[in-house]
Image (tube, rainbow, N blue to C red):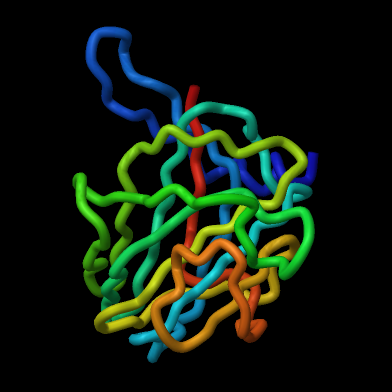
Length: 185
């Protein structure tokens, strides 16, 4: 119930769709990013969201919102997958799915702006932790929220966003860059 109370007030956004009136996008996890965090160019970030703080899992589509601070940011590529049952907390259970933006890899998020990934056929499994991995390849001023129960970010220098069994990451703040994960049927 606590998680659902945290989601109230953020609203449910509707996806425009053909014919059937569109799908209802439901919040899975919301970070409430509120602090600028700058200087991430050249780093890979892995955001892990614990299953205990997620709602609306088990649906077949997902999209993710990314927030920039005043300097804007460039994401070279981004991936989503379920966390492995063993190994490091930021390891993917299998090959991750790439998040696209207007059909292509990566996106430039404008100053103090938000960019939303394209809809992806992907199911966030109930009871499993979620991993979202991205590589910053340009200006990388992002927003963060710390502390935030159930959210943990990890980072390392270099390009490592799609690696399944990764190593060498450093624990960072709670939530970084990712403001909203949504799902739809």
